[in-house]
Image (tube, rainbow, N blue to C red; front, side, top):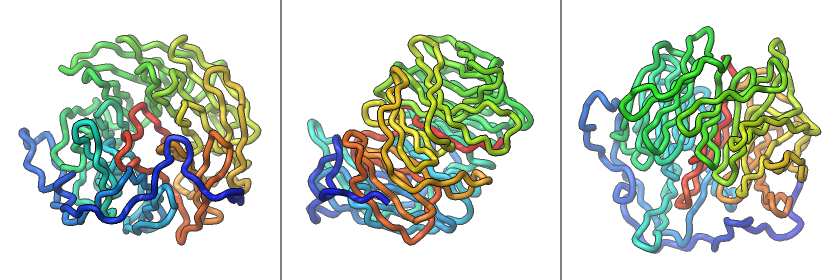
Length: 441
């Protein structure tokens, strides 16, 4: 595996001093979640809460942290050193999603979405910030769901979708771990594997379908009135939000784009051109997506990705030197389109012209497993770096896209599967729909 040719350094936009020693210890509840008061409307939230007893230590700078699931739990790493900070037990197959507050993740577990505190956060004090860190822990805050599915963070709202009931719960991202965060709830006409996006003006973009098929998208205003709708999106799946606030939803024959009160279909160049996993960026009006053309394939191994320009309503394809999977898509700090290939390289694409700018060797070549739940390499862009896991070697690597180098690597005691993280005091990730999800239907 690649190793640094010089002493590891924090990459661009993450060059910080090492965290200092204890400056002040306070109960974490003073800075974040404590014992929550019941919601004003008891029906608006069924989340449970518990008081935090962990002690917080003030740090000189944000402390970004990673979380990696394995069979039986999740390990938490310091994102700058890749040292293990905690090992938390989690039963069953667990998915991880940013909660939207820069500190917590929402783990999709049996019974609902459970808040996982990574123990790193910041507080604004006038013209400056204070940064804190504490021991990571599993909280008792759970938003019940029969089949917890997509979680989408955007503009201070976190939208949860329950595939088992079709219920959408929109939370205030800043208070998601307090247990009294619901600000809006609705249930779609039929349960389905869906997704919802809450926008800054309280507009809600939500899919509709049944357990057998999905093709509908509705847009509701703050009062629940329909402002736009379309049924021209067969197999609707996945979403991303571009820099111009346009929402892009994947279809089996292209995408639907919601912008300025209108839903617009952008056709794929093939009769069947499925886009189901996407990554947006606050630095780019272009959304990166996967692209598949064989409706009968059990394991297609695609070698092209899609780029949807929300300014022009156009879709283009980029050929890659290797295939990839649904955990392979990410966006760089300047909006670069990033794809982790089965050749072990991180491929860097200019989203504006679709040119392949670089292929950075990171891990050994690998093959996509037959089942989507099985461990496979994953990629995460966080706080100026890009992180890549390799289950075959139980390793995680930090990549600097600007210098095209792997600046740090670490060996784990577990086989990593899901990968997520928090900036720990910097701007919360996922504000523009960086979202790739599973493909089981």
